[in-house]
Length: 402
Ligand SMILES: [Zn+2]
Image (cartoon, rainbow, N blue to C red; front, side, top):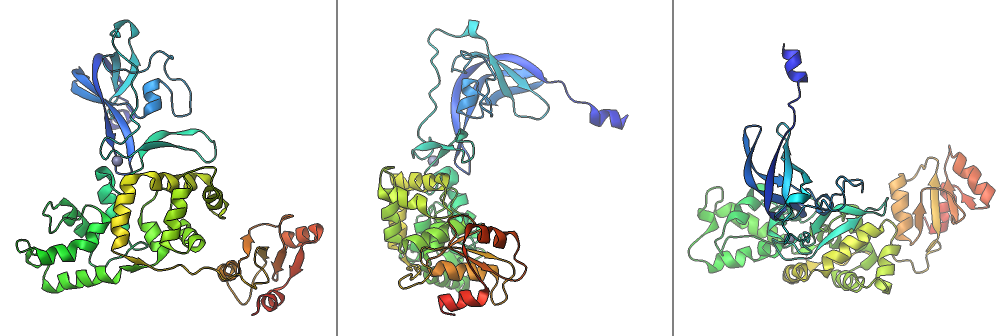
């Protein structure tokens, strides 16, 4: 019956074969995935030549939660005879190693410390909550790595990054695939040299290519030029640094002010004993995982090369730094509660931050001021208990000067 058919699970099929090589594939997000090249073997009627090894831990015999999935000496080595399993359409897996068949010369597999595609250093991140090493090893050369380049370019031109009109994902694919030196865009700075390269070329004119025309080419070049002057937070976001989203990019822009200052500080922060590292970590909203990702990005000379070429084409704007001089609330921790009538909560928060105050979500001993609107409840009680200064919206506005 059809019911039986859907409920029926194919039994997993297994076979023995040897691992001829272990190769590393780099995904579009920079993850390094080891793949076993196998002596071809028929498993369940299908010829299997590859099996995924998932990550460095899996090769060692350690599962996703840090638990042993194979005995300690059953690490997977080149030359090993292994049990391969294929279940349904799932990618074949290496289940175990036959130690009695291990060649004398087989050595422990050394997981690469560099990306095989671009040569940038590869790292395992630490999980923010558990503190454990992440199972995935990732290439840090996101900006230059061919395996990640197209995705990075698409991110670079996306709406909250450079947002270049006429340069969407379709056009990026086209320019990226081209190997014509007057047309190709492989990394972000190439976007800004396209016009010059086009003007110098007598052979390939963009306006003669299907999908472009004289008018749209001019529009494209104008749109690119218009973006040379770019908001600092857009530039930082566009770099595609792991874990650096729009909000984080804004925090960084506000904290460092100019691109030069930001880059200098991120390079200096590579030394964990430096003031720069401490300063980066002290920014409210930036945790250690994020801080580490930024430092790793700036530690990679391949990224710096591209960034140098990029910044040369741009005039990044200076971020508005909160002027806290003479501000009555600079350095104070403020909590808003209850309903506000003259501002939205976000506006009130932005205003307070622009005056150098820290806005917290809950009342604690560290709170300096509680601004309580109608309907304030437990926070008001807590503030009274802790002796925190409390005021209403009008008193707050009077304090900060309207
Ligand atoms: Zn790479």
